[in-house]
Structures are given as C-alpha cells and as structure tokens.
Amino acid sequence: MNDRDGAEKQYRKMTETPIAKLIMTLAVPTTISMLITNIYNMADSYFVSKVSLSAGGATSVVFGVMGILQAFGFMFGHGAGSNISRFLGSRRQDEAGRYATTGFFCALVCGVLIGVLGIAFLTPLMYLMGSTDTILPYAKDYARMIFIAAPAMTGGCVLNNVLRYEGRATLAMVGLTTGGLLNMALDPLFIFVFGMGITGAGLATAVSQYISFAILLSMFLLGKTQSKLRPKNLDLRPKTLLNILSTGLPNLARQGLNSVSTMVLNGQAKAFGDAAIAAMGYVGRTGNLIFSVGIGIGQGFQPVTGFNYGAKRFSRVRKGALFTLCFGMAIIGLLCGGCFALAPSIIGLFRDEPEVLSIGGTGLRILCAMLPLLPVSVVGAMLFQSIGKNWRSLLISGLQSGLLFIPLCLVLPRFWGIKGIQLAQPLAYLLAAVVALPMLLSFLRKLPREEEQ
View: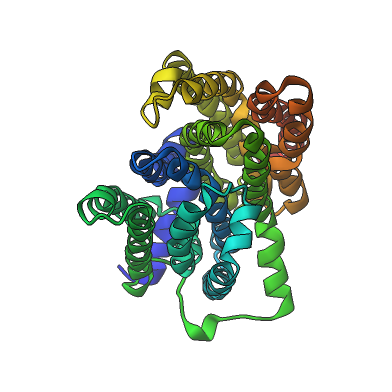
C-alpha cells in the first residue's frame, strides 16, 4: 500500500468509524501507556522506599523534576500533534511533516538544556523542590540520572504524541510500555542486586527512557507514519514556532504547575517531617495512577476531535466529547471507590510507619472523593486544545493543575494543619470542574449541525 492509499484509509477510519468504537480503540492503548508510565513511577517509589524513609521522600521531591521535563516535552508534543491531526483531517500531509519535525528537534534541544542546567545547579534545585537536609543526598543521586535522561524524555514525548494524534496509539503504546516494563525489571536489579541504592533507581529510569525513545523513533524511520521526520521539514519561522508553542502552552501550564504544586506541597509538608512528605508523595503517586486513566481516555478522544473538526464533521466532535465525559466519570468513579476502601493498605505497600499510614490513608480517601470529577476538566481542556481554542484550554488546564491548588495549599494548613494539605488538591479538582463544565457545554451547543453546513 502506497502513502496515498494509507493516508486515505486512515482518513476514513478517523471520520467514519462509529464514535464510541473509535475512541475506545484509541483510548485503550493510550490508557495502557499512561498506566505503565505511572506504575513504573510507583515502582521507583516502592523499591526506593525499602532503602529508607528519607530515600522514599526523595522520590517525591524528584517527581517535580520529572514534571518539568514532561511539561516541555508535552508542550512541543501536543503543540505539534494538535496541528497535525487537523492538517491530516484537511488532507495536508506536507504541513503535518513540518510540524512533526520542528516539534521533535525543538524538544530535543530543550531537553539537553534542562539536563545541563539541572546538573549544574543540582543542590539549590533540590532545596527549591522541597528537599530537607536528610533527604538531600538521596534526591541529588536520583535527580542526576533523571537529568541525564532529559533529552530522551522530552523527545520521546513528541514522538509519542505525534503517533497518537495520527490515530496510531498502538504504535505509541509499544514504545512506552516496553520502556516502562524494562524500568520495573531493572529497579530491583540495580538497587539491591548491584547495591546501587537510589542511584540504581535513577539509572533504571534513564536506561528505560532511552530505549523507549529509540523504539518510538524507529516507527518514524521505518515509514509507519504519515508525518515524516526529515531535516528539510524543519521550519523555524516565527509563525510556525508560535503556533506550536501557543497550542502546547496548556500542557506546559498543566505539567509546569504540577511541578510547582509538588514544590509547594513538599514545602508545606516539611513542617510535619519526612513522614508527611513521604506520605503525601505516596498519595500523589496513587492519585496520578487514577489520573492517568482519565488522561488516557482523554488522549483517545483528542485525535478524533482534531481529525473531525478539521474535516468539519462537527456532530462527531459533539458525540465524542459527551461519550468521553460520561465514560471517563464512570470508570474513574469505580477506581476511586476501590481505592477509598483500600486506602490504608495501599499506602502500607510503601511504608508501614503509623504516621505515614495515618496521613497517607486519610489523604487518599479525601482525594478519591473528588477525583471522579476529573474528566470534566480533562475533556474540556483537551477538546479546546485539539481544535485550536488555546486560551480556553490554557485556563482549564491551569485551574486543574495548580492555579487553584497552590493558594489552597498555602492557606488551608494555617487553619487545619495537615488536614489542610490533604484537602487542597480535592477542592481544586471540584472548583476546576465547576468552571469547566459550563464552558464545555456552551461550546458543544454552538457547534453547527451537519445539515446547516
């Protein structure tokens, strides 16, 4: 099959397959990818927590660093990918290739710069991320390896997102899950068998990231994509760069604010000791696992939206948004119900100190009470980003990720102590949903009907 026939087949698939079936086909591999990514983050926390309480706290501190790398990777990945899906929906493959190449090389350069600067200013950065004196040595050893893997992490984000936005989520899943499974296998080997401690956890992550990057890149080099990565496609004109950056800005805001939120959370938890930092880190890891299901379902919806909006199939955009919203709330509600019931046992998988179990168990139950509302803001942000309504997406992403959480986390502990820290994120999810829902429903009502075009 030549490129033209393959492109036409993919176009028909994205614009004619029944909406529920199409979204599920794309959402299953993206959700698996997100789950594997978060599970291997939890595996790092699990294995490192066996070293010591302070080492376990270090993973919570460095998690914010990984968020910074993901912020820039997703900015270029979604910024290029959102445009690519609309270009392919309007049958403009050459434009798609330009955006894929530009986003990829910009992300690589950005990853190198962050890695170099992170290693150069490692100690002050770890303190800024919320490290205590006892956590600092572990945090530095772990973070150094993460910065070495920075180019693979940022570049891999772009490759993954371009594949997804083309509707080739299964290919993206292969690269991400291979790296994640390898990371989980290498963790105990490097940490315990080779006696490398927390440095081994960081090395396992770095090795797996580069292997995942190589697998994702091979999909493009072997011609399995419509968007071609070619040096001649690199487009550094201000118009193209600004389009990528403005479209990806909601992802930079979301991931960047997540990192700032981690810094604020750790800073506030310092007053309650290493146990509080570790416990809230475990709550965050578990919450992110559920969060990843919502994001995975939403990422299955994004290319459907971009393709069909570009093809002016507006009724499919409307149906896709409503299906994703209802399905996402149902699935996350079920997961939260299970986590609520088993909260202390889940935290106990990491550490079994009474203080960690008490703080973490309560915090996880409060979080699970509000997480079912997450799909409201996720669908809203992803819908607006996929169709180029960047400022609306930016607002919802910011509210969901930190604009609400940060002030709540700074203020509530003054009145309720550790309970205020536990309440901050759940309340932020509630308020973000209250803002996002009317914006989403209003836009869907205003979309033209097929017969009006």
